Image (cartoon, rainbow, N blue to C red):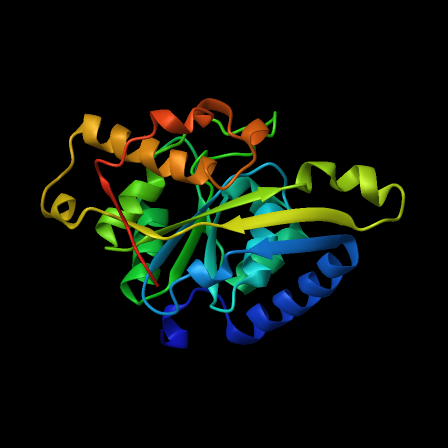
Length: 234
């Protein structure tokens, strides 16, 4: 993807990745499995569970391809965070009001073969377990004609406990198999029931990357359907 089509500034992204990366590696002992599941080219929607502020940061740091995250507008209220997020090219999202501008910005990234990162729950989980998924990931995958890669992150809820002891916190990241929403679904506007069904299927595939105690509303994997998804092989 051409650099001009990636939000942010190349030098700013490099400095943000370097600075945040050094600090994070001092604080976290990260174990990653399944990175071979990330498509090497083309648009991708990456979905993660969200239990701590560091979850999307870790995903951005381990990806070889540049990934553009979506973040709530409130995260930009802090001057330091705003500088880092803007330099990296993070797309701000106004939650709870259908932010058309954020959707258009994310679709521009996908149309130029980029990667988008979002937490389909829409916010951090207060319990660490998966909450009800929102339709944003499905909307972007359908309109951007992009596969979805689910990533489960665990251990970040214990960061403070380890940091108080001046120890690096162990964190696990599981990257699941990519899948596509069935091509025939892109030819028409999905009904409300179809959007709900697709969102559930995305969330169950995300839940499959997590230990049982993290799966929350999607703990019964046997209840998952595959009517709208098509697994992909890299």
